[in-house]
Length: 469
Image 1 (cartoon, rainbow, N blue to C red):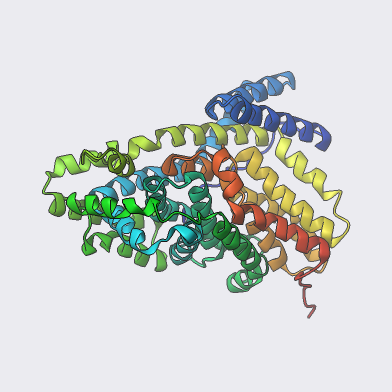
Image 2: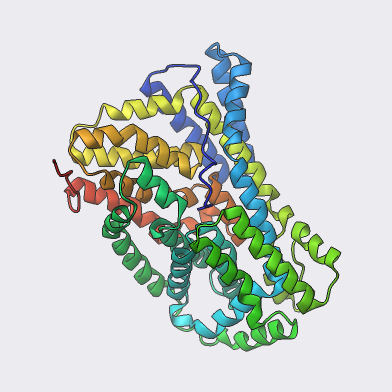
C-alpha cells in the first residue's frame, strides 16, 4: 500500500480485561452507530467517529479506567497514522506536480486513444492491475493512473462510481500480488511463509477473482458509447493546446516506477517523482519557481476556459489531503481506545474458542481480518493481529503457513478500501472524488477475494498441509 511498514499501532497493555461477549456487543453497537451516521444520515465520517470516541470514553470512565489511560490509548492509536499521513502529503504534492508537468494529462491523452466504450471499465481494471503489479502500491496507482481514468469517465459521461470500482479493484489486485508491495511482504513474514510461495498460493483465489471482476466490468461497459466518444478529440485537442502533453512528461512516472522496483523508500520515491515533475513543469509552462512550488500546497488549477477540462485537471496539493488526514487521526484514535479498553483483544480471544476444524479456523481468521478493518480501519493491523493470533493454531493443525498468509491478504489487504473510515477508504475517496459507499458495490475484486478464501477454506480446496520432516 504505502511501502511503509512503520504505521502499525503501538500495542500497549490494556486497561481492562472483559468478556468476549461484552466486547462483541460493544463493537457491533459502534459499527451500527457509525454506519447509520454515514449511510442513513449522510454525515461525513468525522462526526459519527467522534461520537464513537466520546461513547468509548464514557464506557471507559464507567469501568473506572482513568482518563490518563484513555488519553494514552488515543495518542498511541494516532501515532500509528503518522507514517500514512506523511505519505498522504507526499502523494498530494505528487498529484499536483504531475498535473502541472503534464504527466497525468499525458496519461489521459494516451488512454483516450486506447479505450473503447464497449470495454471501458474492463480496460480500466486491467490497466490499473498491470500498473499496480508493476509498482506494488495501490494508493499510488489510484492517485496517478486512477485519477486519469476518472477524468476520462467524467469527460465521456460514463459512471465515475463504476470507474472508481474498476480502478480500486485493479490497484488492489496489483498491491496484493506484487512482490514489491509491503502488505504482501508483511503477510508472508508475519506467519513465516516464503514470499514467492505465498504469492503462488494466492493465485488460487486471485485469478478467479480477477476473471470474475473482468467479466462483470465488461458486462457493465456501455454498448452504445460511440456517440459519447465524439468528445474525445475535443478533450485531446484541449490538452494539447494547454501545452500539457509531451513524451518527456512521462519521465516522473517512469522514474518512480524504477525506484519502486529497486525497493527504494516510499518517501524518497515520491520525492523523486515530485521534484522531477516540478522541474519539467517549470520548463514546459515557463512559470516561476515560487508559483510552481505553491502548487504543491494548494494544488494545480487549470484555467483553460473549458469547464469540463478545468474540472478534470484542478486536483492535488497538500491542502487537498487535510480532510483525509483529520479523519485518519480520528479513526486511529478510536482504534487506540478499542485496544486500551480491551475490546479488540477480547474479541480475538473469543474467536479462538470456535476453532475446531480447518474450515472454522480459516473462516475465523478471515472474519478477524475483516472485523479489525471495520473496527480500526488499519490495513497493517488486520494482517499483524490476525496473523499472530492464528499462526500457532494453523501450525498445530498441521496447515502450511501459506494458507494463513493468503487469508490475511484476501480478507485483510483488499477489504480496507471498502471501509469508509479506513486509511485506504478515506484516501481513495479524497483523490478519486467518489465516496466509499458509492464505489463499494463495484469494487468487485475486493468483494470477491474474501468470499473465495472463505469458500476454499470451507470446502478444503487448495488448502495445503504442512509437510512433516
